[in-house]
Image (cartoon, rainbow, N blue to C red):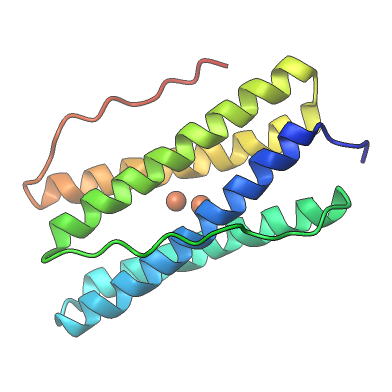
Length: 155
Ligand SMILES: [Fe+2]
Ligand SMILES: [Fe+2]
């Protein structure tokens, strides 16, 4: 692979921190909902944990391929709350942040003509968009639906 633009490496570093924060958040919520006796929610959060871990792994591999040492700067504390709806709302914030980061990364890669990394970020953008949709559906099923303004693909 050609040397990537420093900003692309910056996006990868921020993405790794956010994805690992998502792993920590979903893992914590799986344990929390298990503790509440909600086996269904615990199982769904466990699946999310694995998906976010796969994202983190893909980013680590890409950073190594680009010749940079993977290192997430900071993990966010896992959000928690008094009930499932509160947890889902926190997850929605995190997923929307990921969608926004990947959208920005795709736009930048387009700008500098980096098609390889553009495709990489676009796939992650699509996955996180899908997560946000699923969360919105889950929230709606709990009666906690609020209008979500989807970020349209503007790239
Ligand atoms: Fe992710
Ligand atoms: Fe996600």
